[in-house]
Length: 266
Length: 275
Image (cartoon, rainbow over the protein chains, first blue to last red):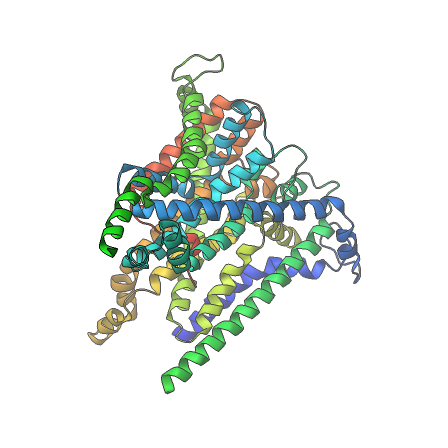
């Protein structure tokens, strides 16, 4: 009985999570503005590829995510190392203010930056958008790196110095490799946060520049001439990519499990 | 000989390089782009449109009837969405955390994976589903809540799961052995132990669903205005003072809730729970 309810709730929740995306994917093979079946066609996919607005928004979003995640990862990793080793007020100040963007409402972060960029720097440019995305994601890089620093054997750095390494060598050849998993997951987190962001982009982007979020929001607010069939095709592609990633991870987890079991049996 | 060079090396290092100094670039960045912008918000909140300093905006904020209605509605939407997420998210997280095989990780992955699809695209998918079933255009409140629950559910499941997976299962077994029924085991053992997860789940869902106007604006054609939407409207009318005062109030709410739930002291990463 317990098992039945367990299965029931999981199946129900999975249906809730996937029904909208699956419905969208089915209707991505029908060329119409609203969800009506007008016969099977690849038309939305073809016209998506020739729709410059859509190609631009995808390019913009991907490049922005890559740039901001790279900057965030470098700044956040160096910052985390600094916070970890600085037990004075500076370390405490940095660690405390690093938490503000994590818990703050996104719209507050977004408009506070927009006010600064509009009145101090007088205009919103690609740079202001980039800075906004870095603000959004550095704290998460710091939060991914800090636990790895805490897990690391504290004497490793000193050992490297005693063996003749310079501080820079000790950092790059000992500390960084040791905390690399944290740096990597911080980078991935920064990418997803940037891809997902609407608020910061909406208030800090230059005019005429659209990310996926701002473009789709505009389409939903003013549906008259919006390319919904193409957007459905685009979502379906993302959905398929997501499923592929899940399948790959599934294989990796299963094979890892088998290996562990083999080792246990020995 | 080696001892001497080592000593000299260390002495030299302490003057030229200190690992703690590595947080300076990040501290400067935070000062410029987190602290300073918030001070600008404070400045605008305490300045009237004519530029004089005072509490006019606060008086406006607390006496304006539209604001009052919007705040009440936002809190209601935030509450109902959070309860909705808990209602679906808790049983799911509980069931997943009790699965013994590796299937657990894959199921969790299935719940979290949609997060890689853009937030607004997911909102669009749910909007199309609602309109497919003829729900759009009426029951604005219900539609908004469904949209919020749909978009924020993973943020509730993740912290709950990461707490439930860590709880000591032998405590539950001991309670069973001592004769407690399953309801009692849940209310006396499992639920109290999972409270930290519930709190971080609530903080992940409540504030965003009060302020993120993407769903309410697009699902209800602005028939439902939440607090974020109000800020957006004022900002669009170049009324930065009024927008700032609302932002400042949100900021204060955020500080109070975080202080109460102890969020400042822990280094938790609710979005990036490791699988």
